[in-house]
Amino acid sequence: MLLRHRLRAPAIALIAGLAAAAAVAGCGAGTAPSSSRSSHSSRPRSSGSSSSAGRAPSNPGNGRNLTPPSSGQPAPAATVQVIEGWADALRRGDVRAASRYFRLPSVFADGSDPPVTIHNLAQAQLVNRSLPCGAKLISTHRIGGEVNALFRLTGRPGPGGGSCGSGAGTTARTDFDIQKGRIVAWVRAPDQPGDNPGPPQTSTSSANGPQV
Image 1 (spheres, rainbow, N blue to C red):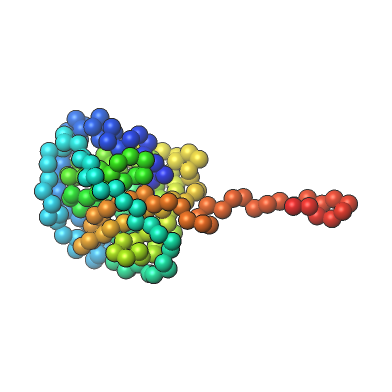
Image 2: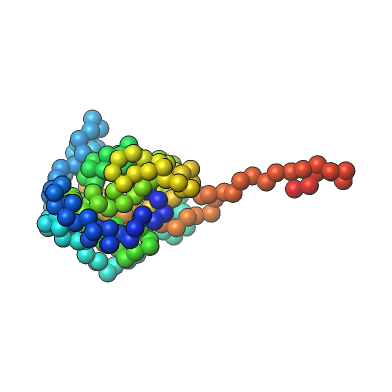
């Protein structure tokens, strides 16, 4: 997704600074992104209440880390489809479609700032725009009721997008809490061993044999 290790700017400051633009763009709960896949088209409307676009997300005060060592338990197929659908939408630069995968309200925690609560579609768009990288889903595993997803970072077009700089080609993890086809919590997760192996060691030859 999904995306760089951190937001381009602190999430709260970014959302507050772009609130006026969000008001122009409009807001609301919206419907799930349309798709030929039944798992996408069947997403319900959010049951959460929406606030005005100018309202900055509030700090829920419940920061958490959902990632213990990998359990190896497979993630439900429907959940994987939601994660992959969100990541694909953001990677092609469709911020609006990516934003519609979030339930309203939902929690977003990038790991460098306090978690924020997304109350409406305009705020969901601001959060997704703040992720300058795209991401290709590599793997998932289940952790209790949540799913840990491993992504390969890429550049992306669209609002807020870019080349991803030195992050392109590296990996990043996110913990997802997904309920009824919508993202309830998006939490940046720490890397696990082997996620980003260093370059292979090179060997050179000498009179005494190869040296590493």
